[in-house]
Amino acid sequence: MMQNGIKKIGVLTGGGDCPGLNAVIRAITKTAILQYNIEVVGFLFGYKGLYTNDFITLDLKTVSGIQHKGGTIIYSSNKDNLFDYTVEENGKVVKKDVSDIAIENLKKDEVDAMIIVGGDGTLTSARDFARKGVKLVAVPKTIDNDLAVTDVTFGFNSAVDVATYALNHLHTTAESHHRVMILEVMGRNTGWIALESGIAGSADVILIPEIPYNIDSVIDKIKEREQNGKLFSIIVIAEGATPVNGERVIQKIVEDSPDPIRLGGIGTKLAEELEKAIYPREVRCTILGHIQRGGSPTTFDRILSTRYGVAAVNLLNENLFGNMVCIENGKMYYEHLENVVGRVKKVDPQGELVYVAKSIGISLGN
Image (cartoon, rainbow, N blue to C red; front, side):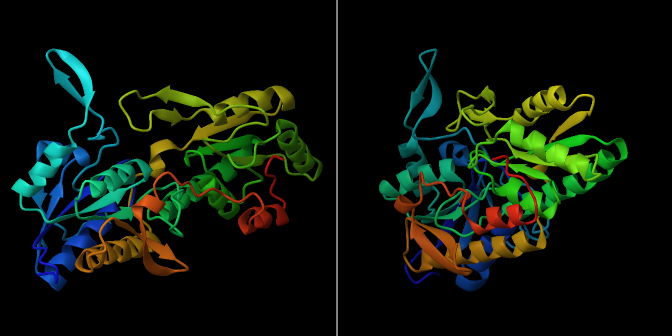
């Protein structure tokens, strides 16, 4: 048992899935049982499981062999904000704060504390539950690597690896047909995936939200390569990238989601504009999409996820409730959720990675 009397903890995973979630669940469960001899349960489908009181027991058998698997064995949801939850009352669909029902379920289940794993939306609700007295700690999760305070989030390295793999394949077909190939990657309003995969995957142009691009600069880079005998070009563009004085391309609006804006399509838009400008050269766009979220986590993410899971359980034992586990200068640390939620970690246009890209001849479109 923990020194503070905690006998049972709950775990949930919210927001978009990513490689490494199962490794976190495994680390939490094994640490809780082997180090503290306490019970662990996993609430299904994120916060929805807290509302419906739907959970499973997590024991050593349950988490055996899951570290290398993508996704999450307790599932996830990015639509269930219990402080603004969609319910039906008197035949009408309304939004309602049902967080007290979730808290009552925790009491009924004798769950003493929670570990919440997720990105900004999930962590916002975690902060709100902490304000209502729920003992909890959080673990940062996003392939976008855009959460403030922590150096890196698990899932990011795996996503970059997938994007780099895609660029390797696009190179050969681009060179064979003398085409311009565009790869659109995720990242929301940040360019971490695009920048790191573009450098690793030998891109010629990298376009990120933090640096609005001028299409003439992109065209100049393509023509410069042609003059040097390179009759193909590779462009990586983040889904949130925008042209100078332009706007993001929104794929759709999901009304019942805490984060309703779904980006996507900027790569296709750029391809159409470029093809008109460099005709008869062909331009093709590949949108990588959810392939970046799936599959087995990299070695780096397996280790990182395990570190996060172990540290989260230890925070509970130390009564450090309301905090998020983070990595600061390579070491495990923590920061209060009040100082985390709503803050976005963006690529520094004057930072080292941008400097490195430019130093090796990559155009950032400016």
